[in-house]
Length: 314
Image 1 (cartoon, rainbow, N blue to C red):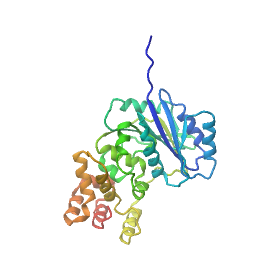
Image 2 (image 1 turned 90 degrees about the vertical axis):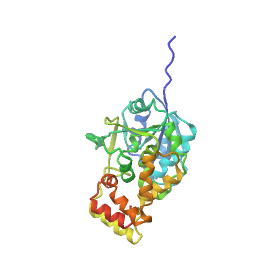
Image 3 (image 1 turned 60 degrees about the horizontal axis):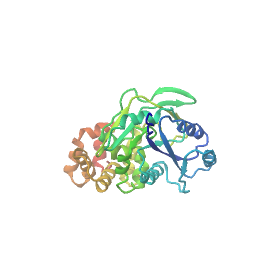
Image 4 (image 1 turned 180 degrees about the vertical axis):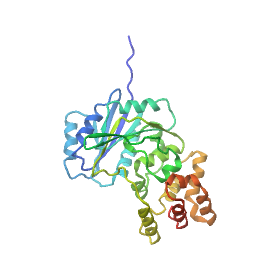
């Protein structure tokens, strides 16, 4: 008698907010995943439309949705992170983030798992995305492999949470630290945070293929946005008089990580220390300015980066 194959178990984490227009397509695509067992955890972030009615209709039809809505308005990053801290206690094999407005191809989860199934240490899978706008597929988001460096993700959010699948070891490590502060996570968001923490002692796998239609529309919480030099300079001068909410974001992030996570790889710890402590001395500033990988990762003009260091903006 042939032994029955045991399917991998995945916790899918979705934060919703006024998603009535597209959420049915996304829910249908999630429940059409092949070769996996999944539980969908949803936390609504204060919707005022029919989003919750739609979710309840799926629950009534017997779909495995665990509704963790608590009525609080947290914002996207904190909402996803609160789901992760709650669900990680249930010790699934794999975890995945889902946005409310995309469409998953049926093999999205199992393709991701095939990349990471043999890892016992923390590992994170991310993939390319098929840009989907006005019902039309407009090709892949990335033609080349995006920056996967640790330095790059201290600075920028390049890989989207909606493509991320990770193992139980990473979920355990992520939640071993205290819940990240609002002022950090609302700018770094959950996807960048997960990437950064994974790199402290694990690895990130990138798939140049895509199994997700990444919907672009006017209400995207985050999207393919670029910040020009005038806006960057404006932010710096706002930081001088204390108006900027992202002043010291990178150094505060690094300091928080150092204080809350253990067993960090030495090369990552050196980077964190250099960014976290640069303001303490002129020598610290000089060392950070000389740290060309950080400047390169920002994609900024070098003079602009130096200005940020000298004004304690980093």
